[in-house]
Length: 357
Image (cartoon, rainbow, N blue to C red; front, side):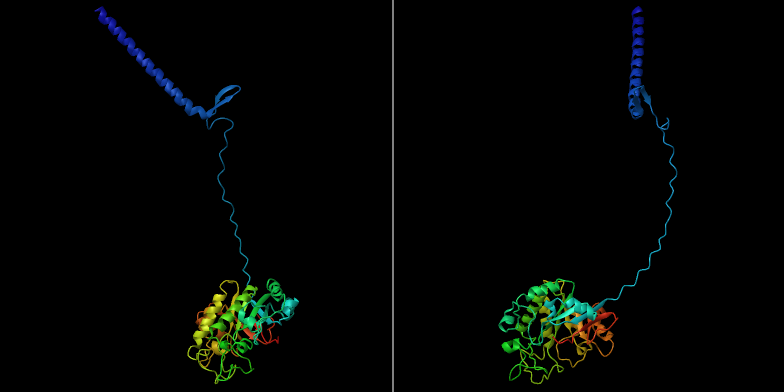
């Protein structure tokens, strides 16, 4: 019996010891967890250690005031001013103004803002030194030393410059090279002023004029103006004695003229900032079926940045309407009216082209 009692005593002692160990382990775990939970709030100072629990102590920030929306400020926009109407007033100047430095002064005195220069005149002479073989061999090119540099100084300045090119009205090249000319049975065809014409149907003639346009763009002109840019009409001279054939394909005039415009566009492809303008007539823009130039309104809409035309007897809206109907956008501001005097105080697009050079 004593042995059994001794065994029972040892069993109770062991049970108590296990319970004590479990309690101590639980306290240790609780202490460790509490330490890590309270660690952010334990402050070590020279006076010891203290807890700074949130929501307690003298450093607690006061509750923030409720947010107040900023006042709404209503700004009444200023009315947009009406833009000034665009004005383009071009004046044809003598060739001498290119090198004398008087272009800007002459424009100011005339109330103009663009200068037109005859860079290929009706007689076929060129107002610059050309590298084109046909211009050199026929004597059309200028030989004036330093002329091209003077032109570059002009076009590089503040003056808006337009290079007029008398495309097919040319008294020089056809005289020296009959293969480029409009012909009759006895020689070169001539108009009422006894001026010869290049043929728009001759590839060599078209390449020559397109090359001139390219050289003028390289010289820095802002705009190239194609004058006499198609076949002659009865208003230029009698067509009765014109030889019909390769130089004057009576049934394919429009095709020849359009191919010429395409060639000029291709020549200017490297100069996207240079505008291409084409002179037209009242007959073309009014749809006169008797017109025999080969030029059409659809060609103008397709190839021209601007169209220059003589001031009509009736409203200019007829011109703009015809161009818009053919597909030209903003035709009203892409139409320049050629007149004998600049209008005073009138907005629009005008050009005086009757000066003698």
